[in-house]
Length: 250
Image (cartoon, rainbow, N blue to C red; front, side, top):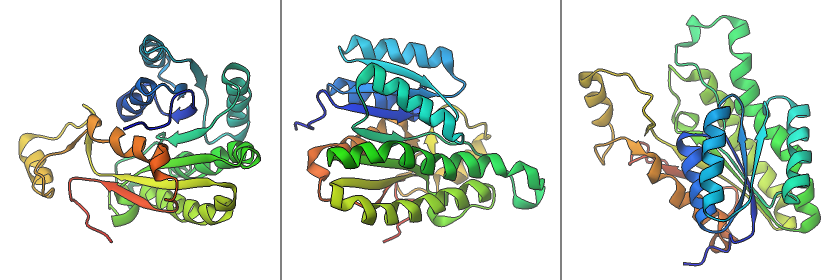
């Protein structure tokens, strides 16, 4: 199926490794030019950038803290200079602490809220006005399923990302008149080689999934490519789960 991504400029945040990397490479295979955002993973970003170039597309590496509006504005300036602007955004960046609420000190939760919530506001406020002027654009925000179901050990990030769901639903109503779609993809546990659970604990986790396995990074790009494609042009303000059936919320 022709996705209509050839020549499109797509900003993908948190794209140096893991899920973001696979999304970036998949979009590059479809002919897109990639603005590859990273924060601290400079070496991995460079390696992913070289892989993208091997597909023949342009790549622009942009470093920045999404919680800092000045960083996001600098990102936009660099992308405009190197690629000529942004057509679509996939926000995969995030930061979490895995612990219960009462183990936090009050100053510890600010970073999670800043990155997971204010980062989305900063991206939208900085990049969407250009999409409005062009009368076309897409913003896809990736969250964890805890944003919809709650999780006692992901309580701050779940709250922040739940806020982004409400924000994007409202934003979708605001910018729909400009032919801009805003959607959310909600992920279950994706195996990115970072889980250190013992076999017994992992077995209990997997048993909560009807498909009896954790997600793979390769399970994610298909939905993202669909939402970026012309086939999704009448879909906005929706939450799409990729979670092996873990949470069946209508």
